[in-house]
Amino acid sequence: MSENAIWDVRTIPGNDFKSETYIMRKPVLVTFIAQDHPIGTTNNSKLKSMVVDKNSKLVNREVDIDMKLLDEFFRKQFTIPPQVEFLVNHKHEEIHDYMKAIKADNYDGFFFVFLSYLSLKERNKKGELPCLKVECYDYAVPIEDFMGMVKKRSDMALKPKVFLFQADDLDLMQPNIIKKATGFGEKVELKQMKIPTDADQLMMMSTLPQRLPTLRPETNVAIPTASEGGGVVGQPSDESEKVTVRKENSLLIKAFVDVLETNRDVDVLSCTPLINGKIEQLIDVLGLAGEYGTDFVEKKLVLPVVYSTLTKDLHFYHKRDNPFGL
Image (cartoon, rainbow, N blue to C red; front, side, top):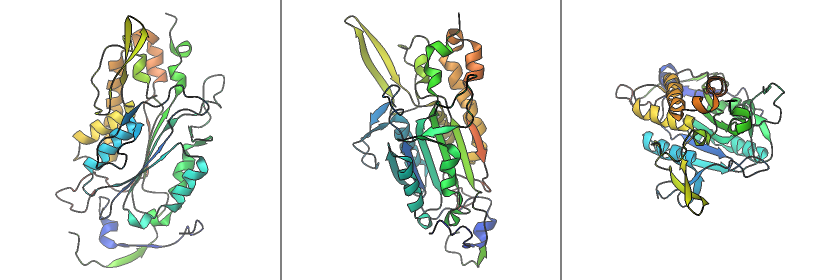
């Protein structure tokens, strides 16, 4: 499809258009776009775990633990096995080329998962960012840039496009900043309809860093995690002492999986308040207020931003009353 073919008309069955739920007869495309570490440094690199599941496209690879958990989640939840692709440490142009080359007619939904870092270079003296930029391998771009890569795709119209941004704000990891001073097969009529291509998007973005749990007091205390990819790594600090470092998933990814696994009868958009509520609970468990102050917890640890233009309900499985639902 040409990039200039913005106003192409897409033909869809009339029943599909009228359905209150996105109808899925083809697989969903799940794309992971990940950065192993921030630009110019290996500090605060993403925590990794080896994938041993032979049914995974990531098998025998050491990947971001968030990618591993979501890969397991998507393959388990979808009725039709998803197509999983991953771009690790790719430049902006390479990501753009990938997006352009997606053969959208092969899929009935799209999940784009960004596991990266928030760009901090443009933060002003008050600590404010003029816009939210996410790092690629070469430079950072506004999140709208990624969403715009599919916005004019008429072949994606009336198909759900979900964007998950886990963009670590590493300023939150600096103690000098945060410490306080103290019925398929049915014959249906086909009609041609012009569908707005900027609709049918859902975006959730979290800037809570993956390593935020390491700031909690007594980091050697093991706190249970929902991730099977998590674990404990012993790191010797001297000859007589070992410090235990937990491999815990980002709060957004952990809450996303936990909530959607336990609320399969609720559409994804309706689950977003539950996801943010779960993140609040996870923050409380960390007990950071006593160490860094309530201002840090209440004002710095902001909940994920949610934006949606979805026009239908989005489900991860075939609902009994709608055999065509996701």
